[in-house]
Image 1 (cartoon, rainbow, N blue to C red):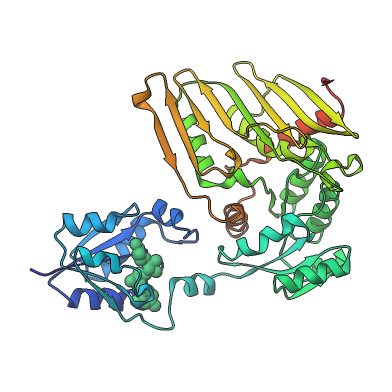
Image 2 (tube, rainbow, N blue to C red):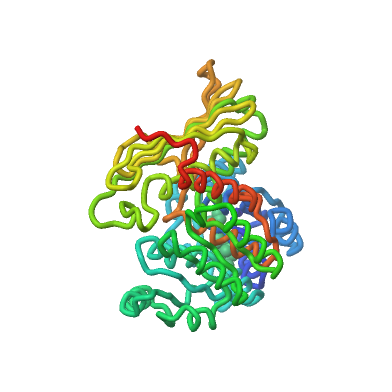
Length: 447
Ligand code: C2G
């Protein structure tokens, strides 16, 4: 008996898939089809798959060509499967030409002609409206955004706003955007949503104005510097069926979410302490060192680090105290202790003091260690007294990591979900509340 194996996602099963499966089946007597697991697809950057793995398996079975369906769950599995199932032929569409030649060592590799003119990507795009995003600001952060949107089907960055027309123009030219504007009013007319990447102090006004014009808002961190502004934005968005999301990127990345779910499942026992730190040295005439533009380590870096604490320990902290080292009117280093009834936590942030940027979550059974830079989470360890029980987790953190928050933002818009479990609105408000306390000098000691 000649055994053939082929693999795929088979999202929104279409004629191209059916032709491929038929051709694969015709190569032998028995066809095994490997359908990718949801986690495997996420890991290889396919973030937009519509059907879940059960639906996709059912779809493949319904073609009648598969004698056996298996799940593909890890890189390298194809070699294992070929040997395990004693496969004679590995078949795949011609879009993969050459890519799987390494399997020739284990069986015959056949690239089958691909059906032109149809793909899951096309079907996904056809079945949904493309959301037009405009970027507010054209500085360092905005630059990372456009390339990342390319990984999310259904969104298209079309324009940029900057009060300086020449900055807006050169950004639009560089990233091939359809339009640019130095008038916020005009800019808002032709888009569905904004990504705000302007200096901190302008966030609230730009966000509120965009909401008032009926636009969804994804706003960079720190979203705002006080709790009442955060509440106002969320309330307005809620009342007008709009999505308002804080672009706290680590909150949306796969590895960080796995850390949260492992900890909440009791892997390290009760959490007793969380320590998060981040330092990035700044020099020259930059916004971060300017007190008039809300510079300083706390305003710059607190959002990501407080997010980790609040997601793990909640919003009901009892005491907050701050210690800062100042230089030229801004905190070049701030340490904050946030105390809960049953746990302690701290953040150490630097823009003129260098510190290790890791995250350590200590529990009654063990601890989670995320090495620097913890906020670009792609690897972490769970460690125990008995080191033989230690576990290491590896993830991919693709590109600049913004694609994950963009994907969540977009899926909130399409599914009309106003709140995201990866960063609740009340959690975002709590972050703003702590930043506000700091800026008011509450419990602050200058060192
Ligand atoms: N296909 C085709 N014609 C199309 C579209 C897809 O022949 N118009 C083929 C692909 O070449 C592949 C199969 O259908 O052989 C499944 O395609 P996808 O669902 O897009 O899966 P893919 O991402 O190609 O996964 O481990 C997974 C494999 O590497 C392939």
